[in-house]
Length: 392
Image 1 (tube, rainbow, N blue to C red):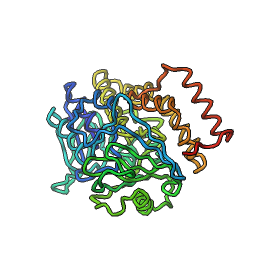
Image 2 (image 1 turned 120 degrees about the horizontal axis):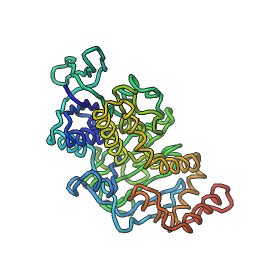
Image 3 (image 1 turned 90 degrees about the horizontal axis):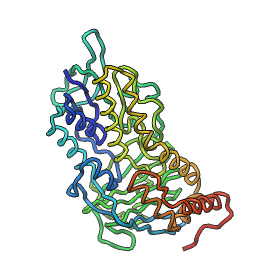
Image 4 (image 1 turned 120 degrees about the vertical axis):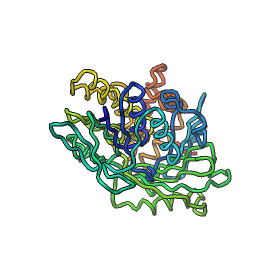
């Protein structure tokens, strides 16, 4: 008999499990081992502080972001007074699961099948990886942290079967030597309709390797062909390919994260990936934390309405950032002409500083109101076509 059964052992589920066992609860953590999620792997210093992640989990520290336009122009944005940490999910996720298990969570290997309810209580049925047999475990509450196409969400939470998503694909390659086209301490973000007609491509350093990929919501796009074109344009076509991975990335937080009884969603299953940037690790771990908080509150009070705390706590802190990023994606990702203007806007020093201050701190920066006003005016000028894109 568990207090909480967590389905999915990625950053969200592992964080929820760790928080719950640290608060004295009996927790099971179910993960389908062997799957590695496609991910650029960027994490901000705030994540490292909030979730006690040490430097030894990083494969690289990035100090520059290069934004590349459809015509090949670029602007390099320095990351002042800090860095962006890079992790490789093949190592980072197992570390998080092992940490939760060391704290007291029961780590199970298998795949979720269904939830059964009867007079005796709530039971999670999963298929054990070793035996192949269905196993039934009793629990009081369930956290669904099993990704964008969450089986828990589709079966249990209203709207969980209609979440919109981007298809993401990347290839982990052996990192080349430093050159003008590749820098082991620089993240490249490519805004080019030939690579992705509605999102972007990326080249992120991972120490001895690099993540090269793209995302799109358009099902007709050939993700592997687009990634091959990206590698060719960046001089990476001949680099050894170490592995290939693909998965859906949600586009929008669900309107409801719980079923009003005994289930709450977290991470990608709840849709918490930042619009525009596609950043997910930090928000997944926050989602796991608020899901754990909601479960702990429900177990203490006996009120199932306390499961709503997960979404309300998350949105209270991050709703405005998600709204702003969503508006930016809708405004600038719709055409190459708009993407060209977006990269031009990134030349502005106030845009650069405020962007990375917001990224590092995970909140909108309000310290310089005149800078916000100037950025707003420039943004309107670019969107209205009153100014031409900067030529560099």
